[in-house]
Image (cartoon, rainbow, N blue to C red; front, top):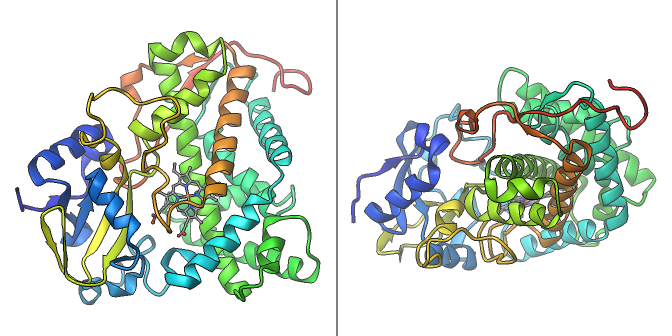
Length: 407
Ligand code: HEM
C-alpha cells in the first residue's frame, strides 16, 4: 500500500476524475493520504465500505471541525477556510442531540413544502428563462439556465418575494464564483436573510423561514440565518450541476439521443446515472477522528481530517462487481452522503423536482436541441469538490417566447 500522499488538485480532477479515483484505490487502498492546498494532510476515503463506516459513526468520525489537529499550522488566508470552517455556528458543524434537533427543524420545514406549489414555481421560472433565450437559436444552458434556476426556486420557497429573486441569484452566483465580488455577494445574502427573518418574526407566513422560526427547539434567529445560508448555497450549486451534468449526458450519449424526442423516462435515467457516474458533490470535507483508530488498514490519529470521497466510493469495485453503468432505481450511491449528516431527505426531494422539471422544460420547449460544440471540447470547473460544466453551448430552431414573439 503506497503511503506517498496525493495532491488533491490538478487537471485530472477536471478531466478524468473517475480514472484518478480508480488509480488511487489501486495504489493506496480505500483510504488515501492526500495533501490539500499548502500541503495540509488529510485522508480521502474512496472505499464504499470504509465510507459507510465513517458516515455511520458520527461519534468516532465527528463533524466537529474544532477537533482538527492541524489548526495551528493553518494560515488565516488559507483558501479552503470558507469551506472547512472553524467555530461556524451552522448545522454543518453541530453534533449530537443538538444536531438531530437542528436537522429535524430543517427537514420538517422542507417537508411541508407543497409539491404542487414547488412544481409550479419550477415550471414558471424555467419557462421565464427559456423565454429569454428561445428566440436566439443558441444558448449556454449552464450560464443562462442551470446556474440561474435552483436559487430562484429556493428563494421563493424559503419566503423571499418574487421581486427579491433576481438580486439573490446574482449575489449567490457572485459568492460561489469566489472572485472580486464574492464578499459583496455573501454580505448581500446575509443581509437579505436577516431582513426576511425579521419580517417573518413579526408576521409569519406559509414558508420555510416561518416554519423554522416556529420550531420549538430554541434555535436563535442568528442560528436560523446561518442554516438558511447553508440551505441556499448547499442547495443551489449541486442542483445546478445535476441539471447541467444530466443535460450533457443526454446530449452526448447515443443511448439517450433517441429518447430526447420521446418519453420522459430517460430524464430520470440520466439523472440517476449522473448520481452514480458524474456526481455533483464529488468530495466533501469532512469528518474529524475523535480518537486514534484504524480505517481501511491505515492508522488514523485523533484529530485527523477525513474527506468523504463520494464519487470514488460510488465507483468501488466492491459494489460495482460487473463494472457496468448503473442507472434505474438503484439509489445505493453516496451522492447525498449517508448517516446523520447526510443531505436531509426532503432536501433531496426538492432538488430532484427542481432538476427534473428544469430538464423537462428544456426538452419540451426546445425539442430539436443539439450540442453546438464537439462533445470532447466541453470543460468542467477545475475543482476536486463540486463537479460541473463551465458551459453547455447548444443550438436549436428559434421559437417564440410563450407570451409572444421571439425575444
Ligand atoms: C434543494 C436542494 C438542497 C438543499 C436545501 C440541501 C441542503 C443540505 C443541508 C442542509 C445539508 C447539511 C445536513 C447536515 O449537516 O445535517 C446537506 C448535506 C449534503 N448535501 Fe444537500 N441539499 C440540497 C441538494 C443537494 C444535492 C443536489 C446534492 C448532490 C447531488 C447534495 C449533496 C449533499 C451531501 C453529499 C451532503 C452531506 C455532507 C456530509 O455528509 O457532510 N445536496 N444538504
